[in-house]
Length: 196
Image (tube, rainbow, N blue to C red; front, side):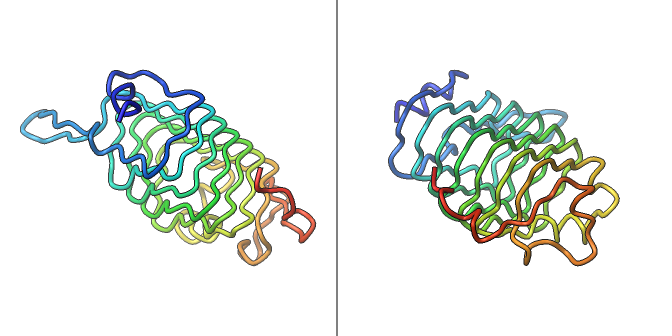
């Protein structure tokens, strides 16, 4: 696949429609450091203005930045993905479910002007770097606030910043100070036009 060839040399992909699942496993290489196999993706993964039927980062370790900018993704598999550098998701629409269970990040995570139309699962996430979510809509629902409130309440609002994010009322834990955290409940009128 030509997309993988460009990504394998660190080139960004722009203005492209990718049919089928874009599985990044062919980009994974082994590097040995002090007797340990540091298996992962060692080049940046940058996708801009793309339409993807599916994106598979499940179980992948990314040592360089991963950027999705102005992309439409039907299905996203980020389960147990590890981001050593940074993850940027900007102006994207996720049409189906977003499988983000067990995501780990040492670097910065930024999600900006993005819509999750399907269920977004963030169970078991570990964010050691800063995370900023700005103008993000979870119209399909998410467990993100429950996971953060139950797992690391101290980081909610300090290491993890929200601004203008919209959540379904059922996805906001009782007693959470939504106004202070930059969270707005989604109303029925907010659900129209989220397809992009």
